Length: 154
Image 1: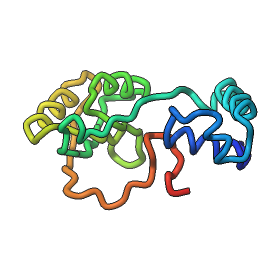
Image 2: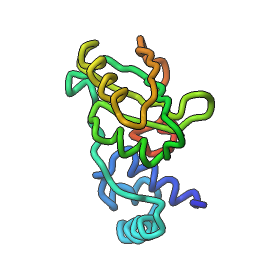
Image 3: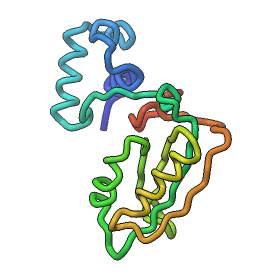
Image 4: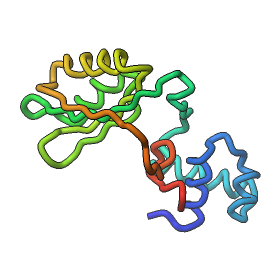
């Protein structure tokens, strides 16, 4: 379990992983070396698993968004699903879920044709029995930043 200071450091990094330790230190009330020690500890214990770049799909011209329910053949492991979907840059998130579907996948595409092509490729994966998709008309509320798992409003 993280203490409040560690949570604040993780939130700061989740908002912008390029922030300096000095800048984060000013925000949380620690020196830059103290922040670095905490970040090193959080990495060593597996709390922070890496740093990444988040790209706005709109910057790539991908304004079409859809959610795809994936129904798998037999006993497909989550790892098999992850490996099958990670090859698609259009897939921005994928999660196993309760209910009838095995996974829900968030897809961004340039247009309907591009979305259809991605959907066809996903449906063609050997582990996929069928898919069901819906298109997003207007995102109403998004609170999570970049897959950090931490609400950006907290």
